[in-house]
Every structure is written in C-alpha cells, then in structure tokens.
Image (cartoon, rainbow over all chains, first blue to last red; front, side):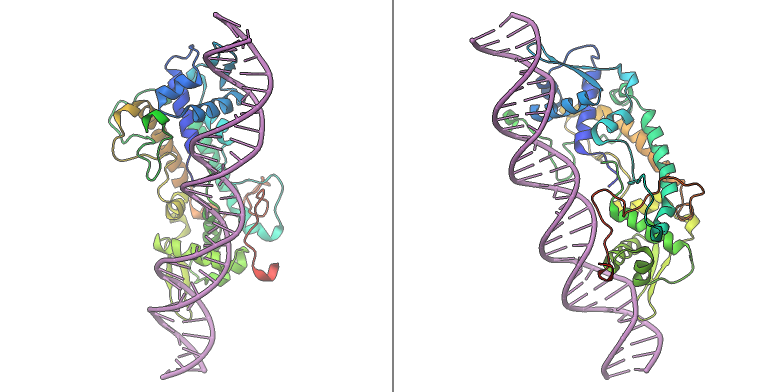
Length: 158
Length: 158
DNA sequence: CTAATCAGGACTAAAATGGTCCTCATTAAA
DNA sequence: TTTAATGAGGACCATTTTAGTCCTGATTAG
C-alpha cells in the first residue's frame, strides 16, 4: 500500500533527532535512548543511512554518527531513497512489455506523472522541516498509536 | 514501501479497460479475458470497487458491472481510496500519543503536508487520463515485467 | 590489551499480500 | 419450475515482505 515502511518512519525520527544538534556526534545507543527505539533497530537504520550517504560514521571508541549534510540539505526524498530505493509508486519496467498487455501500458504514463509530482513534494520538504515541532495541535504521527503494532521496546521498559 | 499494491494496479487496469466503453456492461469474465488477469482476481477487484461505489453491479443472467461515474470523474485518488483506504503515507493517529514520544510528533506535521500534496496529485489525474495511451514511448508500467513476479495466469495459458 | 564503538550479514517470527475456492443469492430465459 | 449465467460474501492458504534480533569481526582511543 501507499505507505512508508515503519523503518523509514524510524529513520526519519532518528535523523530528526540528530538534526536537533547537527554537528554533534551521536552513538547508536544514545539515539536509541532518546527516540525510544531499540539499540539494534537504530544501529541497523544508521548503517543503512551511512551507506546512502546521509550520515557519516566513525568507528572505534569515541565513535558514532553525524549528519553528512546540514538538515536543510537533506530532503524527505533523500530519506526515502535511502531506506526504500527510488520513489516509484508503480513498478516501471525499463523494457517494453508483451504487446498484448498494451492496455496495461495505457496507465503507465499517468502514473509516472503522479510519481514525479510525489517526488517533487518529497523533495521540497527537508529534514530541517521534518524536525521542527508543529505549530498547531494536529493529529500527530506516532508509532505507539499505530493500530496493532508496537514500538520496539527496550528490555528495561518491559 | 511507497508503492501501490499489485491489486491496486490491477484495479486501475480493470477500470481503464471499462473506461474504453464507459456505458457498456462488462462481466468479470470479459474483463479478465481482455486484461489477462484471472477471473477470480478480476471478480475480487470488482466486488471491492462496487463496495467503494466506483462501479455498479447487476446480478443475475445478463448481469455485470458498469462504471458508476464517467471516467473523467473518477480520480486516481478514488481508486486508491477504494483499494487501500485513505491515502496516508504515514500512520496518523487521531488521538495524541504518549507525551514522551514528542520527538516523533515533530515529523508528523511535515508528513501531513507531503500527504496533502500527494493526495492533490492523485486527485488531479482521472481515469480518463489513466486509460489514455501514452503519446511517447516511455518506459511502460506493466505487470509481466515486474521483477520476480508474474501476472496471475489463466489455466489455459499455462 | 581492553572497552567502546561501528560493519556486515544471517536468521527468524510476524504480518501482509496475492490468489484461489466454495457456497449462496439473484435474474433472465427456457 | 428449472436452468444457466451472473454477482456477493467470505474463508483459507501459500508466498512474500517486513521487522527485529543476534552474532562475529573490524576499528579506534585510552
């Protein structure tokens, strides 16, 4: 369905947290403590984000992660690309399909137009904005309230 | 991930086919034959679309389905709503989360802005456009080429 | 040498998805 | 009245995907 994966959500939360002090070094354990995600989950996310170039890592004692770019230069599209691959609401093949499936090709063009609009919307929102507290009491996105699912809890909170 | 489900794709194809003759009555078997989907799948899709009010059904011999509205008055957003529920790239709860998850609420506002932009893009594209053949040779969306997956084949084609 | 950190990847349980199949209801035609 | 052609509802299951954990190895400062 047209929904960001939970891990992409978590990645945004992790990055939003790091964006509160963009130049600081954050360890996975620290980020986990502040975001109420498990260390294992945060570690996994940070590795993925590192590979995608959104954060930089430093190994060894005194190691950790920092944002690779200022929050204003990391977009929502970047985050999604990093976690889920290029935004593509439909599976666009690069090679043509069997001719008898022409009726299917009929919808491809319009979907691609939609895809571009979505990418544009995602590209216009930066991590700086994603980490800004909202100015009105809107229905908030959160994990705990997700129907039928729970935030991965750390053992000490069980 | 940010992707329409296969069944939503199929539903679009089904509706695009029906849009080629908007006033005609189509049976599930006919639509299946023309779209190369299995009758069972098409039947399932059409039931869902009927419940959502996008098509109207007629039981009994000489029964079938018709579009409930002209193609120009059915949007991509309508189709996705029917198949997947309201477009929501993030799980926005209507009740506030635990206060300690405030850092998560931080991203909600921006996601909702993105959500509105996506809904707008989807609302602007109609079934009439979705069923129009593209005017240039673009990488086409099709099912057969989907990596690792196959179109549900009818037994006679096996 | 030790402790604190990241890196890579394997593994598994749970959830979601896609697809099928069955029975029942409706309706027109024979 | 019966038959055939159609839709309606829903259960079920195999497959795929996702989420999350765990382990070992590498790096680095102290």
